[in-house]
Length: 303
Image (cartoon, rainbow, N blue to C red):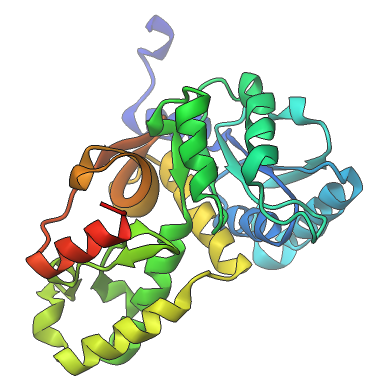
């Protein structure tokens, strides 16, 4: 502490930012989602290193090099590496579970996904785990039940991808910028999900006052067809969630988590708005629902 006595507040801020930026985000899987996540993370330029891990090591290294070389065009400075060695996950700040390079293997899920998670857990220590895929709801839930990982560390980012897509069509319908639209997604896509329109807003005004029932019905009809999001949307959402973890973001994200009594449901994965921090989920929020939304959510969650 004595050594820091002469350090000014501005210098302390720079040191804090430097330590924050000395971070590694590891991505398990160098498929389309994994590559999109790596590209989005590098482009945000808020992490120092992105590591792609895939059993096809040459593919992981080649994809990392390709993204790295685009830094001169996109003006980012992150270092990207690719490897087939899972032990290099050690020391990462966030681990993203994506999809494998071989097309027929696709997203990590099922018994193979659970075996992989069990295998890499010793290297992750207490790093949050972000499930980027659209088919990883069961894997997240089984990880919570069978590996005893705290639920705060298990985060599914696919609802954030869906919420962003719905936000885009709401903005088109309302003729406004997507930045003015605030909404979240609840439930368990793809089995069922609910957008609590009674809590949504546009430019600070209740969304239901800004749009007609006809417009809302049109949006809901289109929203059903937005699942599953494409790999680039899923990758961008996973990168956004990882960035939120690293930066202790104050905004809420629509994420999958293991429910522990929310909406009267336990031991099932469901989407909730959550605030993220260095250890994962810092706080979840249960929105106030009207009767219609509550009934639809219970149906979606199998309650």
